[in-house]
Image 1 (cartoon, rainbow, N blue to C red):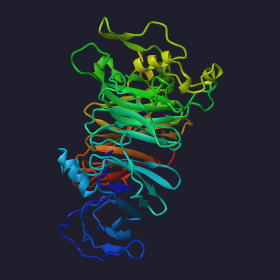
Image 2 (image 1 turned 135 degrees about the vertical axis):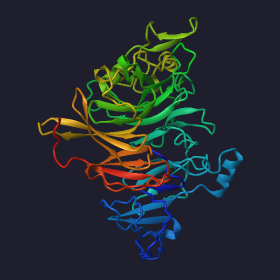
Image 3 (image 1 turned 180 degrees about the vertical axis):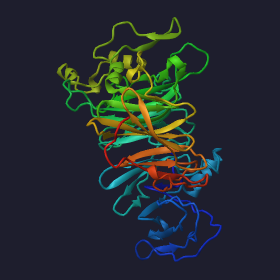
Image 4 (image 1 turned 90 degrees about the horizontal axis):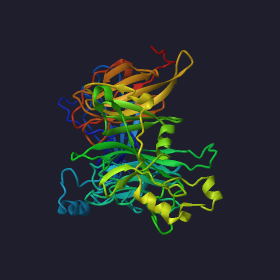
Length: 512
């Protein structure tokens, strides 16, 4: 999703559009007494990205500035949206420019992380003019803590164009980002919370020019007969190191770490001892098509995982993912100068494994107690030998002349009593495809061009019984009319981004 610049936005930010034929109207303050109303002469028949029925009707936008200019409220149809300004200071922007960055694109505060921290606060991180910072947002008053700024290194990228993913699990932040100004040190890191910071090694065998896409928390300890640990999975594309070819090859990966990992005592101190990664294969060999650049990932509760890669959708079973991480390792053979399957004896306890009941029964209560031979092996062998193949060995959906960018999935009951997966797929040219997974095939139910001119769908979010998505080349999301079956025609400028709401079927679906 494109990052909002110099602002934290929960739902939308609507850029003020020029009004060619303004019709003056009253501007009514929409927040508490003491706020300053901002007159916006935009009550006219113009393309309006707020929720409205079909047809050209007057567009009314009400803005009000509150809390000494720190909070902006935007009034729309049946909604009031709040916007906090979080700008990088002038001196930080000047330092950014002095370091050679572009003062038109780079030297701002792009908010790259925004998630719930607890019941009373959000946690937010921004690039802060190439000096990343994080802070807390108090929800009851929707206020930004300007005093408790934290160093955002390792939590948020310096560069707003770099791939990034993160999630908060039990008060701890797991992030995959770049750890330095130049963007040359990729890292998967854990901080905040009760444990000390943990991170990956700076080795190309661990991470090699990755583009981070998504992350997922899986509670594998639940009902585990072996006392297994919960895990955090990271999805990304990276330049492969294991192939014997001169041309650079990018592959899709899934990596995982265990929640209870606290690093080694001597080897891998404050480094992951459970980091393992494997290749995700999404291809149609009969058509000589191989999809290696990961675009988006969506995880469903239960055993089914889905990911999107370019113009194909592949579906993976969690058991196949676990099987790959429990299988043989790859290793680099110095004499042959090539990668191959490791065929010698594997140390015990198994390198990269989570702490289970077996470990505890044999005197290894935490990763701090693992022997050096296990940790040294884990450091040198993060890559698994066997790739993870998609369900049924082929893509779930393959579509020509389409660049898939985003995916969300929900499960809905069918008239036959079965539960079906409904896929909402965003494209690079501004379309949202709604499809039904019938097991052996996927049936496209609807193709809706939500905006003109064409703009990439940058984000899709499943919210209740609607799908919300940010579209457009702009860096600030806005709001669109409700679409779906009504097929409203709307036009937005290239700088506008918008949320699109696609209603789900009002009742059970009938496959076929």
